[in-house]
Length: 121
Image (cartoon, rainbow, N blue to C red; front, side, top):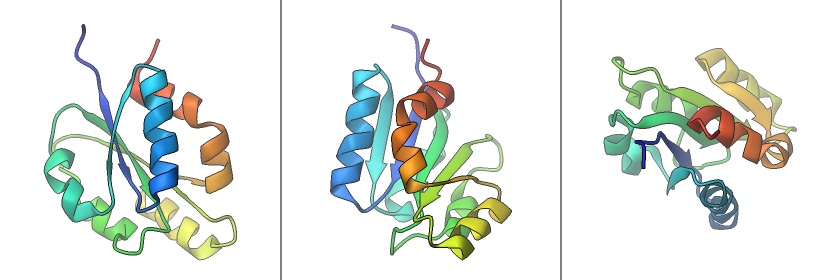
């Protein structure tokens, strides 16, 4: 089996985490879930990590902290999602360099996002 890319999900929402990891598994892809950046820090430095899916509602994580934790040597795509009513948080994530979308759009296009970011054929 060829070496595959891994996605990291940072979200405290266990129900939503199950949806994301289950969708990835059904597509034959790999997404590892963490509820905060500190727990994900070691994995962020791994060469197989292609993207971070970041839940902007995570109370113990900020987009600024996430970008500070990313390795400078390896480009990792960040896709941030959150409530459509939290315009300032979405704008701050976009300004930091993340691809941003409302949570509903993220959920409805999840299979396509995973295929695009993790290289499913």
